[in-house]
Length: 137
Image 1 (cartoon, rainbow, N blue to C red):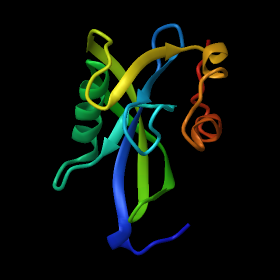
Image 2: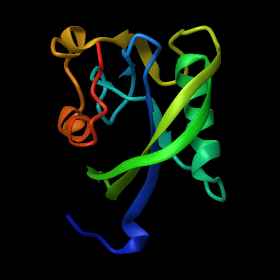
Image 3: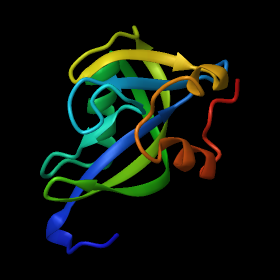
């Protein structure tokens, strides 16, 4: 999938595992992906650095504060007026209490058995598997 740069919509995602190896997931409350589970994330605001966007999105959607680590991978997904370019970063929780907020209808720490039962956004499991980021529990 290719698009000119003026049709790319820059987004970020957070790949967060807890001390038990479970993966932090949110159930999307709005399109795209309404009702589906994915990693926390969203659009990068104009002039915003990726790290700031990841930190903001995780806090808004989950109530957790994170430290943003390395870029794990990127994916492209169709958008209504172009292409979402999603950059996913490894993160560590530093504080907060898990709760659904902003555009998340639910949040959960998912182990591999739980993840297998959830309806997830297109390509999520393949991307996480390819990056060796599936739940370790």
